[in-house]
Amino acid sequence: MSTVTGTRHLLRLILRRDRLLLPLWVLVLAVLPMSYAASFFELLQTDAQRAAYVTGTARNPSIIALLGPLYGDSIGALTAQRSGFLLVIVALASLLTVIRHTRTEEEAGRRELLGSTVLGRHAGLTAALLVTYAADLLLGLLTTAGLIATGLPATGSVAYGLAAGLTGVVFATIGGLAAQLTETAGGGRGIAIAVLGGAFGLRLVGDTAAHDWPSWLSPLGWAARVRAYEGERWWVLALPLAATVLVAAVAYPLSVRRDLGAGLLPPRLGPATAGRALSGPFGLAWRLHRGQILWWSVGFGLLGLILGGAAQAAGRSVEGNPQLEEIMARIGGATGLADAYLGATLSVAGLAATGYGVQAALRMRSEEIAGRAEPLLATGAHRSTWLLSHVLFALLGPVVVLAVTGLAAGLTYGQSVHDVSGQLPRMVGAGLAQVPAAWVLAGLAVLLYGLLPRLASAAWAVLAVCVLLGQLGAVLNLNQWLLDLSPFTHTPQVLRDTWSPTPLYTLPAVALALALAGLTTFHHRDVPTT
Image 1 (cartoon, helix red, strand yellow):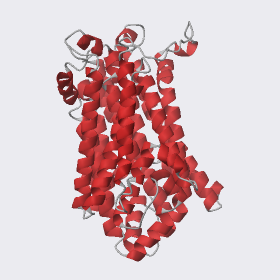
Image 2: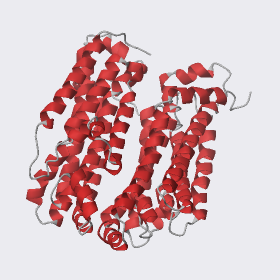
Image 3: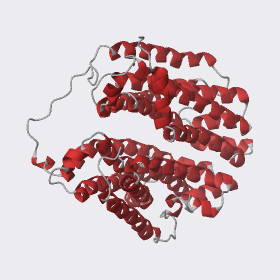
Image 4: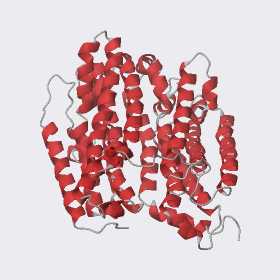
């Protein structure tokens, strides 16, 4: 028996388990660059309009820090830069997919069960990597086809598609290596995401400094330096391929040097006795969620600083372009162009922060599948108390994250216009205005968990649909009834001179109804439901 015996069967198993989630993130991330290109074609039709956008926005240091460098003023170059942050999401989705099908399977005990059959030691890692590699390459292919369909040059579209796909391949392999280091999936995710954060930091420093050598140390920096649409440098694509081979050459030997279920890094022992804070479900929920709230807040705080710093220049860049002014005003919902930009970007931040609410709500399902919920509920802990302890953080998390985003944006924007005291509360309010819509999605996740636990992850699909409606609705001129299906369509634009507070009451009411329905149905089903 070879070390990869049984890989084909594991491939089928992974594809079956991820038959909804995998196509979802591939499709969403492939469609977004096409939507950016379509928007630029519509809004920047003349050389003067493109020059104003490049000068005022695309070459702004804050925008470069967030998205990456700009190598030209063509629509293709602008699209490649605008899609720069999508590479971070591609990398994140790739590494999480690999860890989900390697370390998470070991932690849950399913890998040991499968290992008792005819299964090679490398089959699990190989199957997870092959599926993720295929998803990344399909993402690159769809992205290429979509960009060509919008009218962009085929050569540059192929270059960008390959760069995006190979970025995912590199970080999928990094996820496979991280899965060998710790005995918990959370630890593996933490290591892999820390590497991703370091790569983003190197890319940020290199792109904003006088010398760009730090960017050449980052896989995220390599993608930008392919220079799609602006004199493509095909040889740069060899860097992610070489890095993939190198990381895989380390990951595979490590996978056979450890016991099944163990990691190479020794686990950190906790105290011999639990503190009083862990005496109930709420204390345990705080222990489980506090790290995620902290790091989400740090990440969104940095995002807020960048968005606020770029607001004034972004507002000036659209002056004299009636179409772009109209789109910004419609999305951002403000009379001032800088306010329109901030309103639009905070709306996107609200969509992203909803991910925390969904993730926190679905933590209950993870605890149930891992077998930790059943013994806890066998004690004096009531079902309602246990569920509400997690729901509390699913609702509290978006509040904290979006408040930090608004606070950071208010500080930097306020400094740029010399009005920190006036802009700070406005931006915090604009950030918190996104919370009710985020609560609706968190409430839906709770309902799915209580009613149809096997389909609880469908909450991610609903969030993806909301993202597509929000990003493509204005571009494609979709019917209003279709846009109204998303709770984010009803979010009040508080940066306007006049706005209706009604959604601030109705959306939380809807979220409460969904959560209560989830609580009721949870009381009437078995635990665990596998």
